[in-house]
Length: 253
Image 1 (spheres, rainbow, N blue to C red):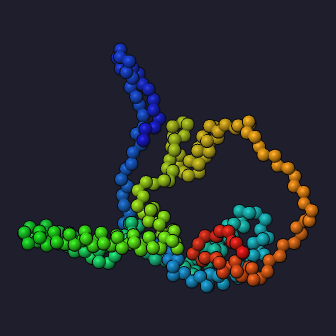
Image 2: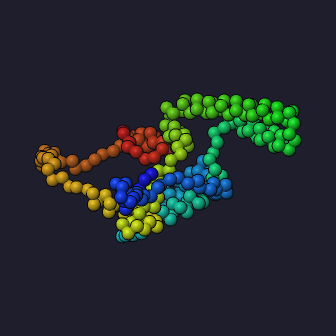
Image 3: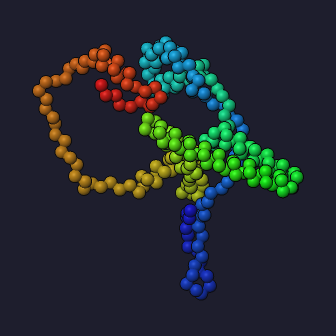
């Protein structure tokens, strides 16, 4: 949290000096409570998406010589297909709760009894609020226990749920913000930040020429591998082992 430490002038005739530094601390950012539109991928028509992808003229893309133009054309096609077959839905940018309906209703009742007590400060309303508060605390703990128990049972088949739960409990933001240039100014965008970090790591990197590299000898072969054959059964077996909700990985036939 201490950055850019510098020693200043001495304090009078003593051996103490002043220290100037930048103190990096966290600040509270305003919470955005507005609703944003996002793609509802669980309700997407993936059969129609596959049909649209089959009808893409891949020969036309192959005729484009520039790689960036080919990539942009492919992205435009896929974006158009997604916009047609995956609907939008409004989501709240606030943190989603894992509480069940009973716990949320208990919290709502607690707030209502508290407002009632503030409006009419009587012992009866105070007792009602305490009962609603204790019931809400009990239901929240019960809901969290049930959620974590179900999560533990699903981790074996879907490890992503565990890491999603871990990220929801993490408060530290790991993204890199603005960094300081050599002239003292801050970077304005991600590209400038990346360039500054590349220059810094390149300046401190030291090439060690004394490393013993392995002896890569030329391998000799007797029979060249001219053809590779895949049967339709092997390809079908590999396709059936793919999981539609997982990222692409290695396929073992």
